[in-house]
Image (cartoon, rainbow, N blue to C red; front, side, top):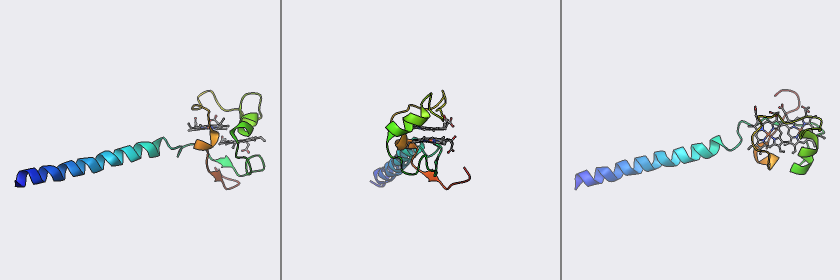
Length: 87
Ligand code: HEC
Ligand code: HEC
């Protein structure tokens, strides 16, 4: 009786750790590491991936590098705009 009770407690703890691992995974892929856009005239009002590509895909003025992750919705990863000036 007591033994089975403890087992349930352990399962709950394992479950909590499993949930933390899942949330940690989503946090890790949520684009936290993506560069912030500069808060300049080029970016401040831009909310459309098509416009990003106009400047950032080869032949644009600021090319995305070869090792860039898959380039679909830019704003899924590049959410924040940094304060003008520093990185
Ligand atoms: C009008 C052209 C233009 C448009 C549109 C544009 N960019 Fe840029 N972007 C630039 C230029 C030029 C730079 C580099 C100079 C600077 O820092 O402003 C830059 C810099 C960046 C950087 C920083 C790169 C680094 O090395 O840190 C990111 C991230 C970025 N852009 C993402 C985006 C995203 C996402 C969009 C669409 C929402 C977008 N840009 C739209 C021209 C543009
Ligand atoms: C899956 C998430 C993701 C998406 C979608 C994405 N980016 Fe990025 N981007 C990143 C990450 C992470 C980095 C940093 C890569 C590095 O340091 O090598 C980055 C770096 C950049 C840079 C800095 C220069 C470079 O090439 O490393 C620019 C500019 C940029 N992204 C623009 C864009 C544009 C424009 C789009 C849409 C066409 C886009 N990104 C879509 C995650 C993303």
